[in-house]
Length: 221
Image 1: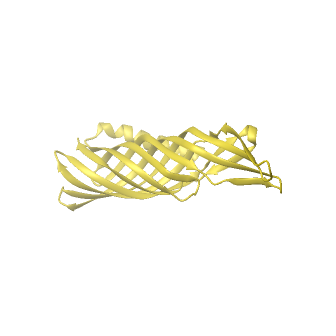
Image 2: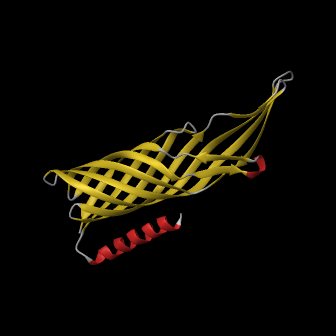
Image 3: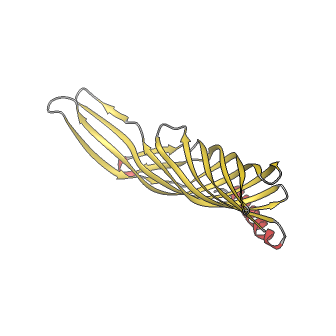
């Protein structure tokens, strides 16, 4: 992260810690999420589980979150060279795990007394990468005797920084417990790369996606 992002994170975390000395309302959330990526690299296996702690001052809140994300890759074959005899292509596939560490600001609206609520939020999430992706290189003979040879290398993936804009609907389940469903859009601020040095390949990882979360929330003071 650059200096400005570090300064913003430090300021928000400092304010969040200082809030423990005041009589604010607190909310914890646990959610499971599913993502709909815009990049064709990713397959249908893109999910997350996250926990969030929110400090509310009336209708305004500040939250911190952490969790686990996994994005499955099954990218298209990229043809590097092709002759009448030989075709060489690369493909990126496997799973990429992230640990998202987030900060966000929120606004809530009561719809029906304390039984139904709407929340809107905007946040930054630093994604710590742990890669199980592989670059697969295929050498295919196009004339007899037809054959295919494969070589592979584990991809090294960079961390990334994304922003999320979203909203949620909550309904009272009793005992200060709320069910919730939320959705929004995630977009890249800094993209990471997937690289394999021995194969001399690199690809930017676009994490832009719509998402849906479902879970529960608990209120306490």
